[in-house]
Each structure stands twice: as structure tokens, then as C-alpha cells.
Image 1 (cartoon, one colour):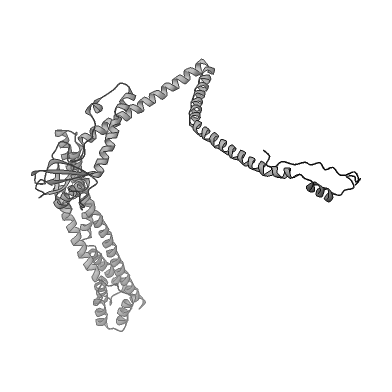
Image 2: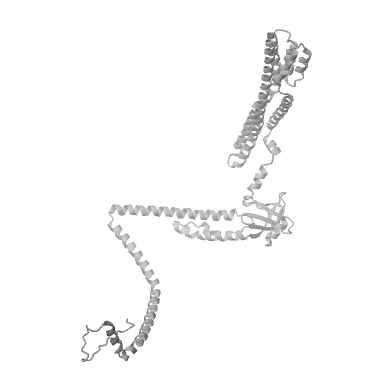
Length: 473
């Protein structure tokens, strides 16, 4: 399309001028061109411009129409393209199968059968899961919870085809989702529950998620429901009746929440404290506790005795020797008696025999050391006996408890593991008590033995220093 039209004008010059084209310069030729252009040629340019605008508008309109037609035809073309692509893929698969050998086709068929068996097993497993979920939800639902809205025929149906079984039980999944929505929003149902004393009351059961609450008809008693066996009347813990009434009325309330389904409360009841463990431990707990008492008393006595002792120094021995060198035996004896340590009594005896030879003084020292060692280690063997005997008594109680448990198995069988586990737990309590007594007693005995040995060594060192001082004299 041309927006402008070129106008070519031929100019005829008079012959009288007799000028050649080569003699006329370029500017002069341009002047002649525009000077002699006709007026009609100048008037054709606006008309051509207007016609060009009209053609452009028409072309844009045709372009919009073409685009709209393409957009309208595009979905159908996309569908046809996808269908053609699927057909092409299937034809390619058929061509590939046709090119396979007989053995390859047989292998392909075996692979397809294996995949089919796996899919059938998955379908059977999923159908079984849906059935188990429906049965458990129906029989083990908490009191007051929304029921599973599904037909019993769907749960009981057992089609031969796994695919039919799975598709037939898919409504269970939809019903379970609806039930969860109802539980999250809370649901109520009339029913009855019993308090800890066994009194049964009529009222309203309210379920909120995994927990349930009960409120009597007169709204006097209420509380959270304890999990019970299927078919039994639910039990509730009295308390917060006003809060349960507010919950049922749709108001704000603050209620106790036990997301464990009563297991936390059961664990708290099992853990009855020290006296409950003593009661469960039976007869053999009392001898163990007696040994623990003996160990504590003797240990405290020895600690009190050892705490009164003060460690002597070499200056003390030097002062006694200095008093003997000056002949002041009374001062030396007074210094020996004034020491708060078993070495003081030994030193007093050594001062009394210091007039004799050094060998006799040394023999006297070893005699006194035997008495110091005996006195320092007194009561320690009793503590050692308690540390060794307590675990043996605990083991004895465990063995007797296990014998009683196996007698119960002989009478009632092992169908229910709960009584057996309870009996074994009670039997192991005596072992627990024995170890609790033996470990501290063993540590206490080791500490006191080390302290007694240190006292004897200090006494011996002070005595040898005194004997060596006499010999140096």
C-alpha cells in the first residue's frame, strides 16, 4: 500500500534557450521542476492519504475478526490435537508390540499381569482399611460423638472383584470426613454415665474432638469422661459442671483436657507414691527398709565421730618433743591430751613410756595403732553387710513374686497380659528397694572406710615422728 504517489512531470524548454541538460546545474533543475508542476498533481496527495487511512481501518477490523475466529476455534483444535496425540501414542504402542517377537510379547504380557496383581492387592488392602476404620469408628467411638453415617450393607459387602470392593467402600471415606468435621465442631447426644461411686445419672454427652464430657439432666453434676471398654457405661470425673453446661450451650468455657484418652490419669493412678510402692512390694520390703535404717543410723554415728577429729600437725609433735627435752613431762602429757584426734591418746601413752628405749616406744606405738584401727573401723562392717544384703533380699522378693505370678498363669492362663504385667511390676519393686538401699550404703561405706584409714595413717605418722625424735635425742 502506497501512502504517497510520485508525480513525474516532463518539462519542455523553448528551443530558443538552446541549453543542454548537462549545462544546467542541479539547483536550477529542481527550481524548474517545482515551478512547472501542475496544480492537479498537488491536490491528489490528501485524497491518497485519506484512502490509505480507510484501508488501514478496514485491515485492522479484519485482523480483529480473524483473531476472534482463531480464539473460538482454538479449544476445539486443542481437544482434537490431544485426541490425535493419544491415538498416535496408542498406534505407536501397537506398532512397537507388532515389532516385538513372540517371546517379547509373552514377557510384556507377564509384566502386565504382575502389575495387575499388584494393583488388585493394593485395592484389596485399601478396601480392608476402609472396612476396619468403619468398624472401629462404629464400635469404639467416644460417648456423644457423631456417628458414622454409612450404610451397614456397604461395610458388610464383600465383592469378588477388588476394584468393586474398593469403589463400593469409598462412601466410608466421605462419611469419615463428614464425621471429623462434626467432631471438630462438637456434637451432643443423650446418654447416661456413672460417677466414681457407681451412681448412674441420665444426662447429655458432649464430644469435642477426642474428648467427651457429661452433664446430668438437672445440671448438678458433670465432668470429663474416662475412657471405658466398648459396651460399658462411661464413667466421668465430677467437677466443672457449670463449664460443661456452658460448652453444651455453645458459650465460652474452660474445661480440663486429656488428649491421651485417659492414659495420663491412669498413669497418675498407677504412680501412687512411696507408700503405695511399699504396699505393693509385699513382705520383703520391710527387712530391706530395716537394713536401710540401720545403715543410716550407723553412718550418722560414724560421721558425727569423725567430724569431731582435728588433723594434727608436725608442730604439735615438735612441741611435745621440746617439752621432753627440757624435762617437763607434765607439759608434754598435757599437749598430747589436748589434741582432738586418736593420735592424742596414742601420744599420751608414748610420752608415758618415753623414758624407756626407742624400740620399746615403737612397740608401744604399734600396740596403740591396733586399738586406733579397731575403733576407727567400728560399725563399718555393719554398713557393708547392709550394702551386700539389701540387693539379695530384693532379688529374693522378686523371685517369690515371680513364683506367685506363674501360679496365676497356671490357674488362669496367659490370655490377658495386664494382670501378668502388674504382678511382674510388683515383684520387681523389691529389687528396686534393694538397689536403692545398697547403692547409698556402698558409697557411705567407701567414704567412711577411707576416712578411718586416713585417721590410722595420720596416727601412725605422728607416732613415728615422735619415735624418730626420741632417737635423734
